[in-house]
Image 1 (spheres, rainbow, N blue to C red):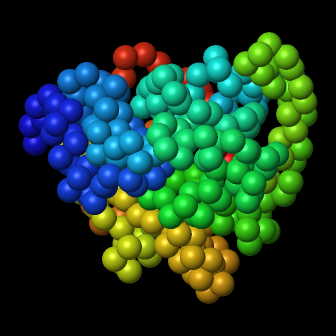
Image 2 (cartoon, one colour; image 1 turned 135 degrees about the vertical axis):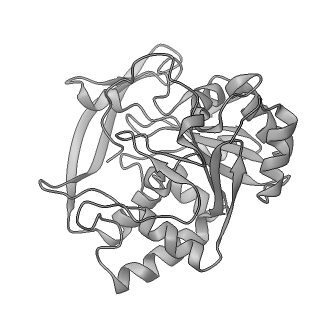
Length: 294
C-alpha cells in the first residue's frame, strides 16, 4: 500500500463518507501518526472537522494530563497545561475560542456552538453526571476513533462507574487549580482506580458488539481505521450487555478482542488502529512514559 500526502479536502471527504455532518457534536480520540503524511499536519485535520461541523456543530477532544497523577502536589493550569493525548487534541485546545473543563487529570476541550455548555462544569469524578462525558450522552453526541481502537475510548469508563464494577475502588487526590485570573483554589479529584491485580480493560469487546449490531460506521482516513458511533447507543448497549457479562470491560487471558478492520499496532497505552503498520508516520522523538487513563 502506497500513501501520498493527504490534503484537507481529502480528509474532509473521508469524514463525510463516515457520516459526519453539519451540526454534529463529535468527541474525537485520535492519532495523527496513524493517518500517515498530512499536508498541514494536525491543523489540517482540525480544519477539516470544523469545516464539516459548521457553526452549529461542536468538536470536543480529551486533553488529559496523566503527569499530574505522578505529582505529590499537582496543580492544574488549564490555560498552559498541554494535553497529553496527542497533537490533534493540543491543536484543538490552543485554537482561539476553545473551552476546557477543569479536571486535574481528565479535562475536555471543545470548539463550537456547545463548547461552553460541555466544558462549563466538571466535578471531582471525571465520568460522573456532572461533567462533559454525560453531556455527550444527553446531547446525542457522536464518538470518533481516528486511528485508535476502542481500547482508547475513555467514554466507556463512564459505564464502569455507573455499574460500579468490582475491580475498581475510589481514591481521592487533593489537587489545586491555577485559575486564568491568577488565583488558586482546591481541586478535589476522585478516581475510580483499578484494584491490585486488575487484568486491564478490553473495550474492544463492547466495540465488537456495537459493530455486530450495525451501530458503528467504519472507514478510513488515510491509513487510519476510523469509527464513528452514537454515545447514546454505546452507553445503552453497554449497560444491557454488562447485565449478561460482568467481565464485559476486562481482558480475558491477557488478550484483546480482535476487530474486523485493520490491524492493531500495539504500543503501550497508545495502541493504533491502521490498515498498514508500515505507513504509520515515524515518531519524531522518544515516547514519554505516561500512565494509562485508568
